[in-house]
Length: 428
Ligand code: ATP
Ligand code: MG
Image 1 (tube, rainbow, N blue to C red):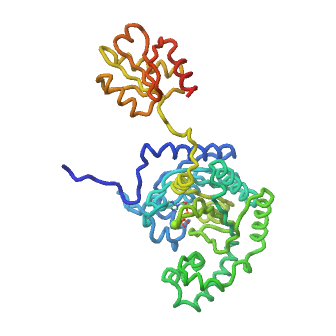
Image 2: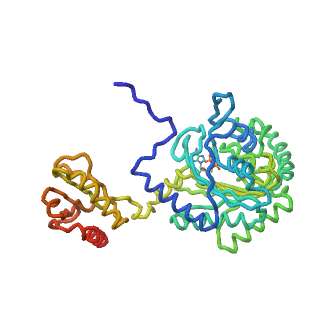
Image 3: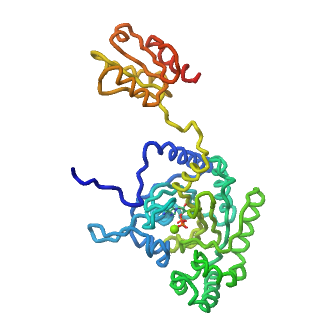
C-alpha cells in the first residue's frame, strides 16, 4: 500500500461531529454583528509580504518568526495572512471605502502562524475580526466592547471572562516612554532574558510583555507609562472608562498590556479566561489610528479586535454551554426495497421536503434488503424510519417505524404523511 500523506502539523481538520458547534458560534456572532450594523467583508488569504511587514512591524514575533512566506511563480514574495487587520485596511483603502466615510466591518476565516502547536495554539487557526474606520472618539471603542459583552452573555460565558484594558498613548508619548524604559532596562541588561535583551534595542515596549519571571521582577520598578501619557490619549481613555462604568461593564486596568503588533495606539484590550490554561486570551484588539496612513491612505482613525474561534469553541466545550438544539440529528430515514422502489423513495422524499421543509430526511441509497437498511436507520440517529416495500407502493401508503420508542408500526397514506411526521416529531 502507498504511504499515506498526513495533514500539516498544527493545521486541523474540522470533522462533521464538531461542525455544528462551529456553525452555532459563527451564526451567533454574525447575527449579533448584523444587529449592530456591521457589514461582512471577505479578503484573500494571501497578500504581499510587504503589507504585513509594514503594518504588523518588522520587529514583532509574527513577522520575525511566525509568517508563512513564499515566492510565487513570478518571484513575488507572498505571505499567508497571519491576521486580518492589514488585509482589511488594504482592501477598504483599495476600494475607496475609507475616504470621508465611516465603516463598521467584520470578517472571518483562517489565519496562519508558524508557532509551536499546543492546546489553543495552532498554525492554521480561525479568527472573527471586527474593524471600524473613520470614528475617533471613545464611544466607538466602548461600542466594540459592549458588543463583545453581549456576545459573551448570549454564549453563556460572560462570567468566565475578564476584560483587561490599557492605553498605549500617542506615538510621541510612546517614543518618550520608550527612551525612559530603555535607559532603565539597560542597567539590568545582563539579568534580562534573551528575547528581552534583543528587544531592548528594537522594540523595548515588548519587554513589558515578557513571560520571564526574572524580567518581570526587574519590571516591577520600571518607569510607568502613566506618567508619559499625552493629554489627548488620557482624555480618550478616561472617556472610554466612563462609558464602560455607565454601562456597568467591569474591567481590569493592566499597564503591562502592550499587544504583539506595532500598529496599536491609545486603547488596547483583551478578554481573558483562566479556564483554558496558558492560552487564555480569546479576544484582543485596540485602536490603530496611524495604520491607514502608514499603508498609503489618508489618515483615518480605526479601532477593532479579533477573537480566536478555536479558543472560544474550547471554552464553550470546557464550560459545557452549547445549547442542545444545535445538534443536527436526523428526523427520518427513508428505506425502500423492491422493484422500482429507489426512484419511488427519492420522489417521496422530495415531496415530503416540499410539504414540510423543516424535516431532516436521509434517503437510503444503494439498495439492499430492509434488515440492513433498518440497521443503518438505527445508527443514523433518526427518530423514525419510513419503509417502502412492494406492498406499501402498491397501496400508496408508507409504514412508519418508530426507532426510539417501543410502539407498533403505523401505516399512513402518502397525502397525510408529511403532517403525520411533523406532528409526531413535535410531540417528542
Ligand atoms: P497570544 O498572546 O495568545 O499569542 P496574540 O496576541 O498573538 O495571542 P492576536 O494576534 O491578538 O493574538 O490574535 C487575536 C486572537 O487570535 C488571540 O487572542 C487568540 O484568541 C487568537 N490566536 C492568536 N494566535 C493563535 C494561534 N496560533 N492559534 C489559535 N488562536 C490564536
Ligand atoms: Mg501570538
